[in-house]
Image (cartoon, rainbow, N blue to C red; front, side):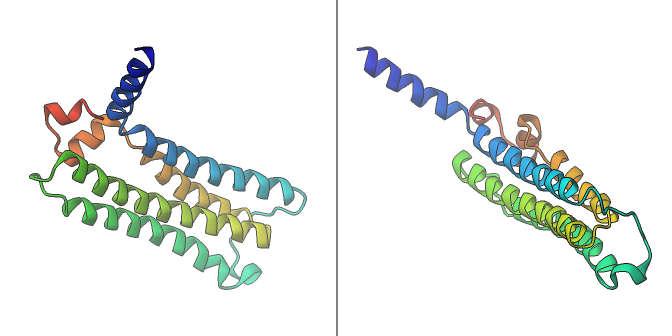
Amino acid sequence: MLRIFAGLTLVIISHKMKLKPIQLIHTAFCIAVLTFAAVTLFINKDKLIFSTKMANEGAMNLLFPLIGLISISIGIFMYNRMLAGINETDTFESKLVKYQTAFLVKCALFEAGALLNIVACFITGNSIFMLFAGISFLALLMSRPIKDRVIAELKLEYPDTESL
């Protein structure tokens, strides 16, 4: 009897925790960026400079920050476009799967911009790239999936809102 009850409890808990896995993935994205930035700063601590002169790194000085900012723009665009493809008549499960896909694409693009600029800092020792990595990281951090935001973006109603 206890074994059956424990099994039912797990089913009920997992049914009501639909948002937790994606929040965990978001946290992993954030930790990955922070860890890589910390390691880069630790390794390059003796040779870090802060320079905006184009002659120092050539095209990398302009290209990497630009790619970081473009990846944020593309991430937001793709996210909004994918959310627009969700019909209000879709089932809750279908809406959630489409939301998770859109969210992961957005986070991956935000993380890519941050990691690219951290790599540029690692290669050149110029900490100006960390500034642009920070912008991408801030965009990633602010995109954390919160229950109220997910409800609003998916236009969920009462029975489905309790499943998050």
